Length: 112
Ligand code: 5GP
Ligand code: ZN
Image 1: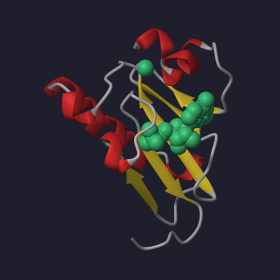
Image 2 (image 1 turned 180 degrees about the horizontal axis):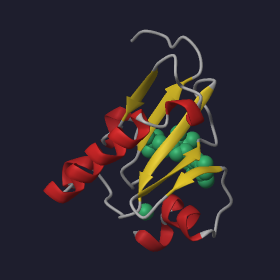
Image 3 (image 1 turned 90 degrees about the horizontal axis):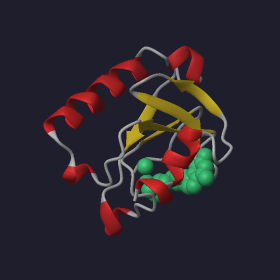
Image 4 (image 1 turned 180 degrees about the vertical axis):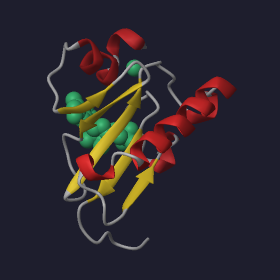
């Protein structure tokens, strides 16, 4: 639910975060529990719980966000490469029900 959503609360300023970027479409915040030297999360403004529930419009937005990330490598500190991850559902370990893209980098990432 939007009212209980951690990322919607961060967007509204109800929960503090380190925000690196925001515009009408999305925000980029530091992950509170980093899994790499640089671990950011790109969060669309619109609350859609799961990627498999996304509309066509939402899919276009995700593409736009990924394109913007690719043009922000310098300011995000990921010029040497980065990994984008979207977790969908329980098996993937999705814990926040608001679609988001993990951005990992700042070091040589483990292969998987
Ligand atoms: P998921 O597991 O759903 O793919 O990713 C959720 C991410 O949100 C996790 O990596 C978790 O550390 C991060 N997270 C959860 N709560 C907060 C919070 O209050 N602030 C920030 N900055 N990140 C959070
Ligand atoms: Zn939300």
